[in-house]
Length: 304
Image (cartoon, rainbow, N blue to C red; front, side, top):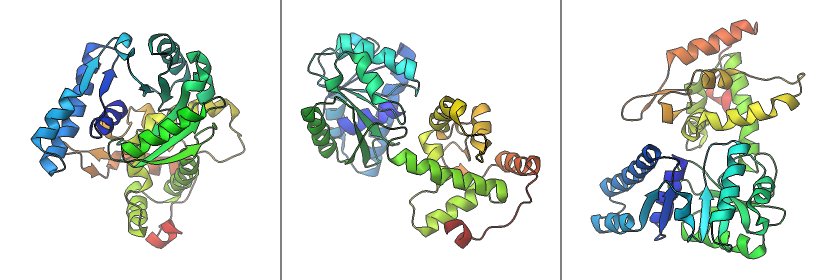
């Protein structure tokens, strides 16, 4: 999903794109997702048939890493697993042109480790898009310890060309946005254990002025991304601090958000989010297990 969204963002800005997937089935799914974005833009009037055709001519999908040998910028958007990403960056270091910029879309992981694996650390940085990547304007540009100044400047220029709002971050766990969102979501999950439900929290925050509430946002981004981080950090977690397992339970049931049609909400065939009695039952059961007396929250209490 993320890779296809990034590809669509580049294509809509006049950039040639080569998308590489692990096998033919994944390649075909990715191509179909890009075409679906183009068709939605066509139906909404954002683009016309001529632009759709121009984008299709600029787009290629493959299953061989060698297809990336001639690119100027390569953006990795695989699963949020350091071992997998390190292996990808080793391959990219061998396959891509020596002057190509190698970027990772990682949400949390250490860019400097990926840079080391590439064999060209000065040409590596993070380009962290937010889903859906073809729509969301924020782009975190993560400067590694050895990222060259001209590589950072190029990334900023690319962000401008594709209509994104770049924010430069150093290397740290979660960078800027996810470090903030982690604390925000944590407090919202505590509120669920104490008596609220996801739709009430989201409605209150949207009434406050947020485009989407926290649970709708994480369903769109994918619950598995932050789950991978929580599992990675579990050995270092302070057992004295409060921790909610609600999101972990959803992930253990394979509920990763919109992409699985179930997360904090369930989603119908049109993608409409619907409150899920199964999630509400899980939340209530968790409150009982933790011996917490559930209380009512007004919209004002949720907001402030």
